[in-house]
Amino acid sequence: MSTDPFETAEVSHVLFGTDGSEEARRAQRWAMGIARFWGAKATVVCAFDSPRSFRKRGSMVLPQVREEMEEEAREIAAEAAAELKANGVDADGVAFEGSAVDAILHFAEERKSNVVVIGGGGREGPRDYLVGSTVERIVRHSPVPVLVIK
Image 1 (tube, rainbow, N blue to C red):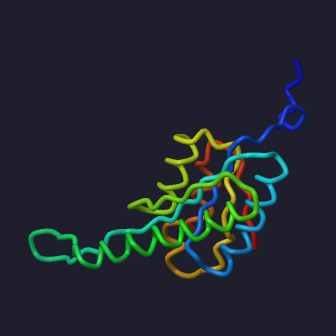
Image 2: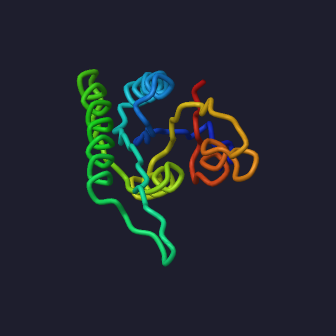
């Protein structure tokens, strides 16, 4: 039995993470191409973090803003999934409350994805030096290969 992972590579499920940006749209074209080539299903996920108001004794979620953010994430995921479907890919879109890292790791496992496709996170700054970039954390912790599109 061969130990070469590319000898038996097969893609039955593509996980595509998006935030609706132009960078994500470029990644979407790659996700679509991979899914079409392999005849694979695709899941589009858009993550959103609940906004909080911090007070002396803790924090509280701002419900109206949270609902608006969730609706926007649902719309972004649904639009991307609809475009994949229009191009012959069996796709669905989901919104995920939490970080993009948690969303990708959760759905990669839940949907038994074979590959993750994401945009290349061009946002660098002081925060990335402290906690690392979202893309870096996804690449480090993903159970499957990650294709990062710049």
